[in-house]
Length: 419
Image (cartoon, rainbow, N blue to C red; front, side, top):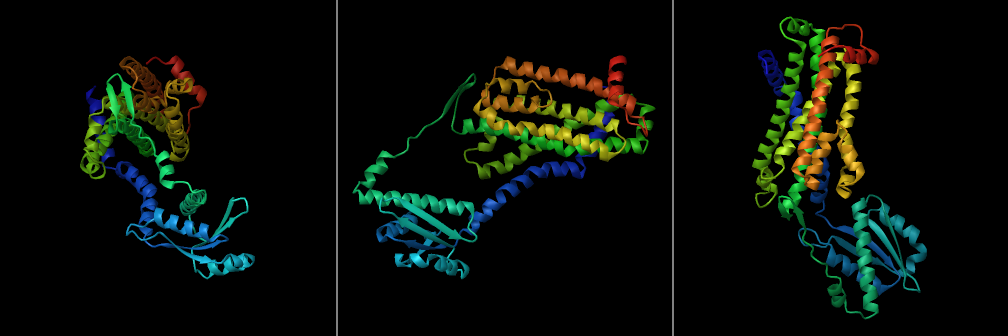
């Protein structure tokens, strides 16, 4: 690494690590988790008061079973019943519509549950409400199903305890055999969580820093800073310094997350769960593919910034590259179900998504050392080729003002110009 490249690397690194964009990239995962988990926590906290149900049933035994089942199965944190019932006589069935309207709109109850037992012992149920959520409706549905099963067992004089004994679930403990040994329990959970963390941070890092890279280069072109740099520094040195600076920024980002995980993780996970992540066998490879992915996209964004002289046009194409970084998310479930499928293998060889899929593939499948090393070298070759192509684009387009090079011109540069 030349002296000029090192100076540019230092400037890029220090300039970006002090920027608001980098701070946002650090806080963004926590903001996303807060937005995702916040409503669930608020919903849990808000469930401190019982819900009132009006039960209209044409069979008293079934009505009593429904109430006792709900009381037994659903309790609040203070051990109070979650559901409080009031019964209405089945003779009011003919006036049900008027009754339901009065109950709901006068806020006498949260919902009205109408249950009809037919002559063939089939049960038809209807629920009327204004503001119940989907979880609440599903809970009432499940409770009603349990109550009807209990009613039928009592009617047939079946031993309920015997039936529960027959339905007693089987405890299945997982053990995964790998080249490194046998994984079970928290170890298996770690094998899946760690690669997801790396992939998620890589995606967020690429999305949040893309605009910063493009804006920086366009700003340097607009203020003629590049012209001053080119009087003493080679274009390849400028580009190398910017790319390596972004690579070090990615390392800093993942290091900060690990520090946060160390200090806060054990408060949420038992048995030194956070510390065990550091002992993950493939941690080094996660870091390697993380940095390779960061370098690849940084190279593309540097070349992209050199092609445009205004941010609006550059951000449109930059947004397309950011969407490519999101593609692996859509294949997560498929890879977990079919880790050795041909499609998974083919996708792993697409350079722009290779870093993401290899991080997942390593965590899910535990491939051989030779395969992982081969994919790392394969990705490195692509990065070297991209750097060569991008450096030529950067060198010839960085001083072009008022005219954007066409696709044919870019192909011509890379076909006829020696490195």
